Length: 328
Image (cartoon, rainbow, N blue to C red; front, side, top):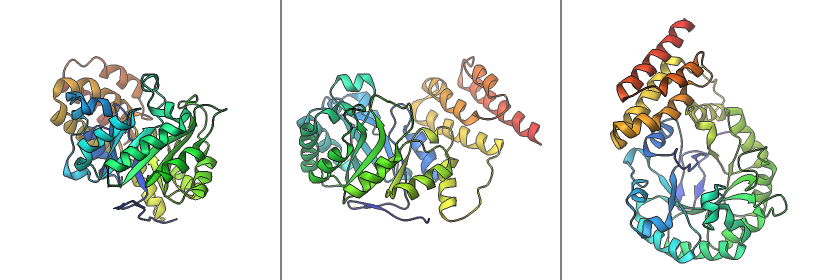
């Protein structure tokens, strides 16, 4: 295997690693961290098309970006072709790539007719893709799942529709909506979709180690891989995949290195969101950074007791320093 530079429409990527769009996770600070560790393309959180055309302040906040994270992909969700097209026209100059979410399994999104609910309506998939394509001249991708449930698996049909209506690539998470994130991702479906389409196929699902990433590339022939939950608190996953692709050994990650990156993440989060929001939102990320280390469960409990950001930072310093000292 080697590092290649896949092309999605007019966008040439530096490598095959893409950060998945994840609601409540892929804020700008998180994306900046993952970019440093090798992500060729990062995505915003999922953005509501309805929220954009209503000029919702909270929706607009999801689009805050910086030069360091370029190229940025923006993911839209919605169920109305005209609304999605109008929202697209509002943000066309703010992204290097646009993605339409047709895979989210969350009930709130499903009830609105968006996300993976669209997989039940191939005609609507066609109308949405066609409308967004007409409104946007840049690279356009569609993210899908295998199907609604085991009896309605239609990822090849949906992928072909997306291709026919002008999408430049399709991302497949090979689980049904009914599976959510349970069970095992069926990577063979990514290989089947790759064989069925002329446009690039991006593989997603169950990449938790560097060897997982290499295996997906080898087994499916996909053009790029999308890193989701495996990257929580572990940006080194991206670095390690790139090292394996070039045949280089994987260095260990020290507690002091984890502390440095966790505090950088926290600093950028505070810069953007302020102290109060950072106090509550960074707890989950700090727990992920500590995962697998001795005393992590006690650290998680202590984080919940922090009343201000200085206490939170002190707990981070104490925990990682102790782990580092104990190791030496």
